[in-house]
Image (tube, rainbow, N blue to C red):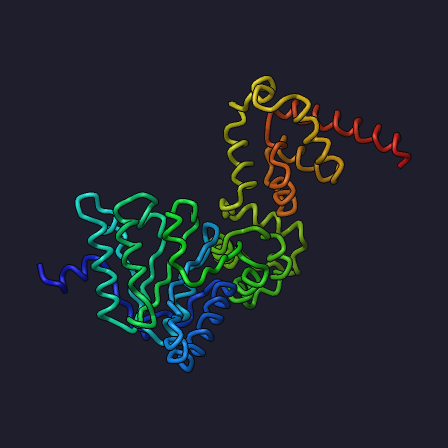
Length: 355
């Protein structure tokens, strides 16, 4: 088999002019790419000086973030703005059990070096090279001997599960950017662009109601909302909450949301209080409830009532539940009993302390 056929099987090549210019990208990720581009620009004038001291830029970048992060925004920005070719792995080839994934990884890097200057983008690197695998050893070797200084190849890798990578692999990266869940500005930018002209929707309020949502879920919600009939008046907060609930779009990246859904669909099989107490002592559960009540009794009561009624949680309720996941345990009656017991204990403590 010729080299050209082998390369074609392992990777894809995208020219700068083929990268979409109008795609909606996660702005917070693009900002990181802007910072890195500035670093590349400065390196041009400092390369010889660094080399004299035995130093290098490297150009190996690891992007870490939660599920739904728009990691591709980083490489698309660099590809357009540098400009530079983009090489990506065909994951189906790397993961094909009938083929040697380690060889495919080596072929991909060789193709990137032959196509330089280029970006080698390794998405979901924890799947490409899980810890302790032959592919991990091969990737470690290729990363260590590929750099912007010598090969004019940037390696950009992304992962949502860094704990599944070999520690020695992690030490090879020159820069690590940690991307948090979609920021308020990320969400506002998506809603303003997709819902442009919808005067009935307050995009800032919508962004507030989607706090904690992943970027992909935000885009899906925007698409769902743009297809709804416009209201004659500006929607109030309650109206927007109902519209979100009716959209069918849910932030399953949020542990609290996912936990409430799991509890709802499995409530018939909810563990009995006695089973929970075998894992968590009775006094410990009461202390957790007491902490929740002490922090915000009204919010605790609201979350318990919403869970008991099987209704969707607001963004504020999801945030509270993520801090107090013990509220998901038990049946509706058990939760209510715990709540009332904690309220009595809290009131008694307040009286003792003279408050």
